[in-house]
Length: 247
Image: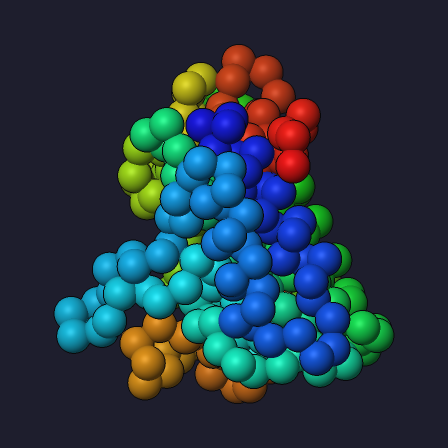
């Protein structure tokens, strides 16, 4: 899982470095797929099954722009100055998946958009203060929600974090909201994808006709940040970091 996580984190960094005006989301997707496959891995999201009647996911990366929350489809859409771009990527190697996401500013963005990105990322770090042996899953959830709402934003409730390992999505679910002291007790060896999805306005979302793209219901901006983590007997280990990966 460490190897899968390193590749995934490097892919996220590559995508983030490509976020600039004039670049298309398909160009980002193609570059990330080529990188992942060049590392001897497979893109976890490519051809991932959709809901009944919905085609499998067509790209290697979910690229969601502005009011798109998650699962944005790569396209010939060119990014514009002021956009915020969420990139969610996974890599599979050696029988295990890595999964991570980040939101990047395209050129100069508004102060409020920059604050949304910063609060979303920090809410992850607030949450994993409780990703320790003996705490429960909802202790992470509550910490994320409290931090986000303290800063005037809202957490998406229709989509959640999850266990990750041999399968991309495993038990337990890791919501970004809820009361503390509930859910499975955390134990060493558990691997979780903790992923706050934060809206500038209301938490409600809608799924578009393509069956994949999720947008905010009120058209407000949304940001996403995620890492795969390992529960240990001490501090949690971030699995989706580049480390000593040779690029």
